Length: 354
Ligand SMILES: [Zn+2]
Image (cartoon, rainbow, N blue to C red; front, top):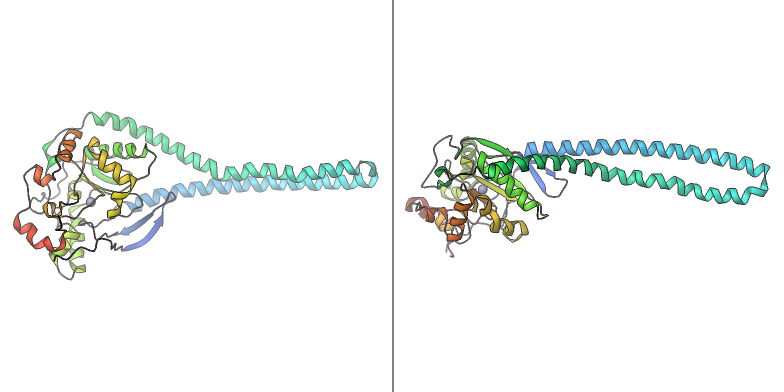
């Protein structure tokens, strides 16, 4: 009986965490570790993301305190008016008792008048700040959109986009697939064509009203090596077990800039497949040139456990659709299966029930 990986156990080693304003917790370096992911997940750019979100919050806070200032001023003016009115009322009451009833009636109106400006001021506190952010976001989105549309036509079938990367077929050092260039998407780096396709995929998903986070993309060789060595130590020197958790250096698609990990709340768990976002991505990823790279039931073929969050860019929607509809993994589709020495020792740590 093979030892099962502890699928539900998530280990996190973080130096801090940050709760995103729209839900979810972002983990601030150096590592967010997920035992399920053979590539240890590092929220590589979460620092930048967090900085960006903090800046946004600071702006919102500044706006709020400006509004609070305005509110205080309005309250002061109203208080002065009430005092002034009260004074004249007392004066009038003393001199002209006949008008006391009418004055009292007006007095009743005063608190209402005092409350009336207070309410819009309070509503303003939350609403315009949010609107300002949304407007900025919409503008940014518009720019991205036109750029993404131009790119869509340029997506090509460069063979390197379909390069099979696994323990038996490692990549050269300093290899970035496709264009050889990296671009940033929401603070996460990916190969530039993969990045543009990712922008479109994120937009497509968000257009349905759902939220999603891109949590991991390109990783440098050194970084992947560090992760792997760290994992070996953690596994008491068991290299095989470590390799099922953190990819052996030069065998991670993340190092080629072609892989992206997506999440609803910043964590990467099997349960992602049950979320509406996970289901949408599995159904639509091929329309953007991405495939679900490590499907369930193919652990022994890929050497990697089921990862519903890990998407691999393969160059075009046509290629992605062909692979996905074949029901095969890249290993099978391109005939680059793992050599016995690259799978046999790893079997105890993979799911063999299929
Ligand atoms: Zn991944």
